[in-house]
Length: 239
Image 1 (cartoon, rainbow, N blue to C red):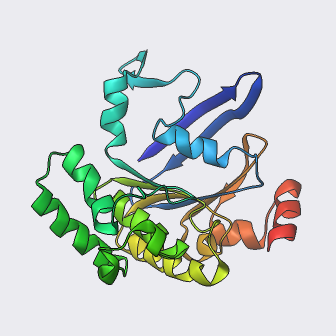
Image 2 (tube, one colour):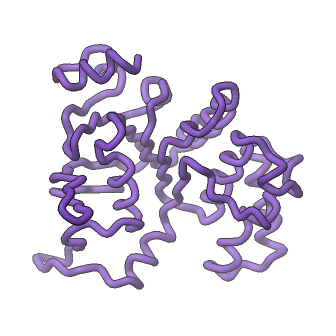
């Protein structure tokens, strides 16, 4: 589903990604962990082209070419992203937030989009909050609306950028339950996380530091028996 080979990204003179190589298989829950500033979120944003990698190319036979904006937009339609800070439209109700993209991007009728949005809100446990505005919802509820909104586009891939980091601890569980349900349904997911979600649900885990992949493998193996000293030092502080 995702194949990265030698991905580099710089902001001015600062090199944030220094040659990332990894592969995410279809149906896999792929988790990224690491300290702040290690490049995890930047890499996630590169996957759906919110950040343009240095030498943004695609392969066509033996020829490499830079992706056109129209091609980037087309690829992005198949990728859902859930941010740390929800990013809901404050002037729209929960159901309006979820139905907006299918109407504007896919040309779905408002009636059809509203029906589907209500179904997705029910899936994330918020059927009774369809008419509420974001300001009337808790952080955990807003994040679940954001997940429903991403699902409304029928994505092939879901990206999660530390989706519970902005939540009060007691609100984390409901969001993780929705993510577990997605994983069990076979959704391909790339998750930047510090949660035990990686241990419980993840199929693969990568530890990043200073713009490189330091260690990777089965989440249970990496988290319980890390092989690299830098991984051991990081995990000793967070687990």
